[in-house]
Length: 162
Image (cartoon, rainbow, N blue to C red; front, side, top):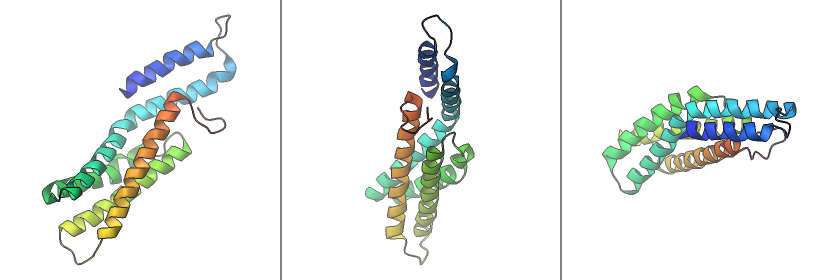
């Protein structure tokens, strides 16, 4: 799906970058190049960012339904996705997106460790902190997805942004 969006963005950009004489508008080549680079990066990063969102959702669901086995599995997967897979795509092409994804990965990684400690019945009490980190990871990964979609659509509010 991300590849389809990137291709559609490429076609629309070519149409918009061509003046009435049929020649490309050189002033917009930089923005076009940034958008293309961003679309390629997002095509590679999206599966892991999406996996982080899915596993955070699964951890919250398992917690709400009091399903210890499902929670253990979700927390182990959340650890792997947050500690390895998402950070492998950082830095992102845009600073604000790097910050959002970094925060999401950090919060999810911390939550995963707390969750696994609780599941193993360690004497530490992480209940409130685990919930807080899980909620923050959820909020940050959703913000990162929204930011990425804005960049793909070309509606960045930042000066010089795509």
